[in-house]
Image (cartoon, rainbow, N blue to C red):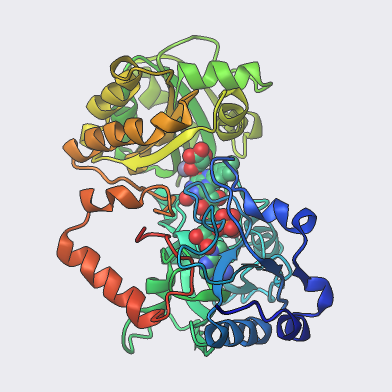
Amino acid sequence: MPSLPLTELRAIVGDAHVLDDAGATAGHLTDWTGRWTGHADAVIRPRTTDEVSAVVALCADAGVVICVQGGNTGLVGGSVPPAGGDPARRPLILMTTARMTDIDGVDAIGRCVGAQAGATIDAIDRQAAASGLRFPVDLASRESATAGGLVATNAGGIRMIRHGNTRRQVLGIEAVLADGRILRRWTSLVKDNVGYDLPGLLAGSEGTLAVITRVLFRLIAPPDGTLVTVAAVHHVADAIDLLGALSGRGLNIEAAEIMSEAGISLVEEYGSRRPVAARAPFYVLVETSGPGDVEAVVLEVMENAPVADAVLEPGPARALWSAREQHTESIARSSTTPVVKLDVSVPIRALPEALAELDAVAGVVDHPCRPILFGHIGDGNIHVNLLDVPEDRADHVTAHVFGIVAANGGSISAEHGIGRAKTPWTHLGRSEADLAAMRGIKDAFDPRGIFNPGVIFG
Ligand code: FAD
Ligand code: MLT
Ligand code: ZN
């Protein structure tokens, strides 16, 4: 039975950065939702790519499994080790990128910046802003979510409708392969079309193919100004029509989010200000920019739109955004059990029907279940949060929700990835040939299966 090479690990990262007592490791072993807790024989905190390379090479030879962790804000159980450690009973370490936080100087002409994997999104965006640019991906976990985690999950976020997902922002990558070799595809060239898109492949790999150690990200020039509108509407279709009318008038949609009355009353209960006075079944938040008098165009569109009430505020309109961004936290605090969080997407035309069916799920199950739905309506992305569900009924209600999503031609994962949470249902959106091809890539990159066992493939 292989044993953990603690002495050699300490020689690589330093005694202080090999944690093997329960007190020091506990904070890394439960995920953000509280639904998953894993076991690791030690937590390792490397500082550089070379240290990561040496640790991986040592573990590969010693038959030790490696689970990678960034900010531990992932929502599909992939950021912590399996509950009982490695299913094949091999020693297992959790490798955190918490000490890998360097951010390079911004290339203002090439509009890009390099960052170590453990740098937070907020820190990268602040570095970009100091040069008059912005980081194109934004999400409410920005102060903890890291560059490595963002790429590994191919995160979406609130700006995806305007700039695309994280994969679209990756110009270059440095990563350590499963034998310790360093892969470096690092160029700020706009066009470099030599061979497979390995950076694109590592985006969304969820720690199963390599340890991402640095990323070269695209940056964007922010719009001169934006306008944030929150409108109360009676139907999802009215929100969709409103988005169409605004972009039809030549405005850029910088963000488009939908919330329900259940979500707004919950965040109000936990201290956020209700965004508009009138109450309605749904609230749509749209941030727009564009040439000309954006406010005049928005007001004109709203006059002819079926909205019950609306408020307009020049960006950043933090209080209006707070009502949306407090959803995740408020839902987690309100639920009497760890929230069943199902991040799904459907074709935009199917949203009204799908939202109605998903909201009605509580009526078709035989256990407590309080649905709160919200999400990135512009991407057809609904965050189905089921509160108070007894843990032993979680899979049952998940299967029901995924059945509705599949029947509407949707995806069981819009932006959070698969992790360990969704592995039983990957067949709903991927054919046998597709799953076999992905398994082939996993076997080619990680033949000993030492990276993140159970993630994506179960
Ligand atoms: P972790 O949670 O630490 O890890 C996530 C996965 O990436 C794991 O499988 C892990 O093994 C792997 N990983 C981490 N670092 C590396 C690395 N260096 N190399 C290889 N693999 C690695 N997600 C969205 O897409 N859109 C949202 O709008 C959004 N909003 C959120 C709001 C809140 C309040 C919270 C709590 C979460 C939200 N998330 C959202 C989910 C989460 O923030 C993202 O999935 C994020 O990308 C995870 O980054 P992380 O650094 O926390 O990664
Ligand atoms: C969000 O959009 O806020 C996140 O994806 C988090 C969530 O789904 O709760
Ligand atoms: Zn989201």
